[in-house]
Structure formats: structure tokens, C-alpha cells
Length: 286
Image 1 (cartoon, rainbow, N blue to C red):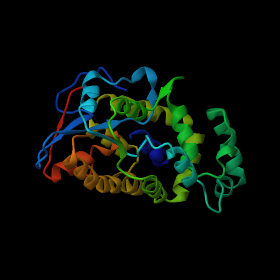
Image 2: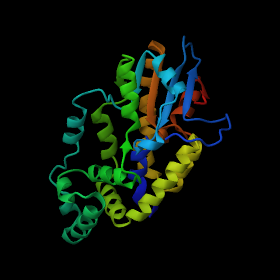
Image 3: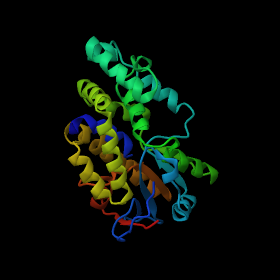
């Protein structure tokens, strides 16, 4: 079952807890060195969570307000972003029904309706990532949900800080498309048919995220099967492409970056990659 949850996990780790902190790790990291005139910061987010579990601390708000530009994975201030994402998610020459086969589609569709309250037919012409997004939302056990990146963007706009993206919509969709379509279909099918297991995994991952330990989160994801093509295409290759963008931005002016927390940890995570480039990257308690 592990591999069936890869896309769901990678979609989420993109809630702040009162757990004891060791001072040796955090989801907020300061970047210095290599001739930078002022520090920049990078924060590991969870792409969707319960509203009651989310807050932007005074320290986080202060780091953002002191920055001269804000970066998300995408430029979430772009008013055409949703339209771009929707158009790029369309299947070409196929449907979910044809890819699954009539028997499997009927079974999955009935269960999807029970979970999401909407028909899978609404997404029949879209890539599996689209209905998987609906499963992610419904796997979070609360009525009021929030997208932390949106809240960070709103705060940056309040402070009139320019908002940018580390990658374009095309680049993000191309990374998703590198994962074989049959693997995506299987993730969708198995996640729908085993949704109780999905919810359990999501609760466990939220608990790990709340520890604020980037390497623990990376290890959890690896144990749940986010290796192979999933890790290479959706994490590692994107991390490597982001590093030159991050370096250029920091050299230009003090920057605040928000990315899925799964991008930070591990031997090819953003933190280690920056350290290999000679930067001093240190955790900040918030």
C-alpha cells in the first residue's frame, strides 16, 4: 500500500504545534554567508491543514515583514494561476474512465462520491492529480481547513512585499507529468478504495510535521514509499532547479521563501543543497 500514497504525501508537504523544541531543528531556517549582505529565510509548510491548528507567530510575521520579496513554489498572487493550473490538468485523448476501465471506474466512482460528496465524473477529463487533490482536502479531519501558503501571501501583500514564484505552472505540471500516468491512476484508485488508511497516514504525517524536524519528516515520507520516480521528479529535480533561483534572489535582496516542508530535509533537500553551496543555514525558533 505504501506506493499508493506517494502523490498524496507529496501534495501535502509542501499547524504549528506546542511540542518541546530542542533548538537544533525547526521549519524556519535562516540563510547567511557567501557574501549575503542580509539574511534570508526559508520556511517548510504543510499545504493544507485545520484552521484551528494554524497560526503565524509574531516571529514568523516579523521575518516576513523585514523581507524585501516573498517567494512561494508558485506565484500565488497571479490572478490567472487557477485558470492556468486547470487548463494544464486536462487529459489529452483519454479520460479517467478509459484509463481505469469500466468496472474499476464504477467502483472507484461510487466510493469517491461517498468520500468527497461530488461525482468523479466531474474530473473525468482531468489528470489524476485533480481528484487526488480533493482526497487530500477530505483527508484532513475538520470542517474548517486552511491553506497556509495563502495566509503567508496575504501577509506579504499586507506588508506590500513583492510576491514571486520559484517555478512556473508549466514547470510544476511537467514535474507531475514525469510520474507515469498508470502510477497516478493506481494512486487514485487505491487511495479512494483504502481511504481510511489514507486518513491514518495523513494524521501520522501531521504529527511528524508538528515535531518541526525536517529530517524526521523526510524519513517518514521515505518510509511511506515516496522514493523512486516520485522523489526524483517531484522533490529532488525541483529542489535542484530552485537553488539557482534562490541564490539569485538572496543576492539581490533579503527574501522569504515558503515551500512544502518535504523539500527541506534529506541529503538532496534544499537545506543540504544550500549548505553544499557554502551558505550557513541555521534553524530559527518561532
